[in-house]
Image (cartoon, rainbow, N blue to C red):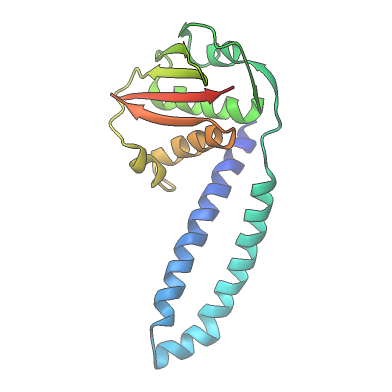
Length: 180
């Protein structure tokens, strides 16, 4: 299971590298003279090889859709957050991917974090009250990259998004909305 977690982070890392390389390539195209020769002979062919690899990786990673099954969400949550108020019932989701996300959240926020479940018209809200203070914005988390500790949290939260769920930070708590 640990290898699957690392693969998720590797795909995120390689996507970040691809984005950064595209920016560098644009800057290099602006150069001239001797730099232009170096660019044409060395840098551009290397970039094109990396770009082909990144396109293959992006293609494969986009195929990694959640393998959904019916899950009793409370059982999944109890493994990582023992203090749960409410019962969310069943959801459709990829157990392996959601295990990674909830494991990462509990590791990052603290195992004594409390979870409150609220039923809403459009679905369920999981409100996670962290044991450890959460002083980050959504933007800081989503802009993080390896080796920042926030990078693992970013990967975990992206998995919720892949399931069609949303998340936000309010008053230091993470709120995950699950639409049913």
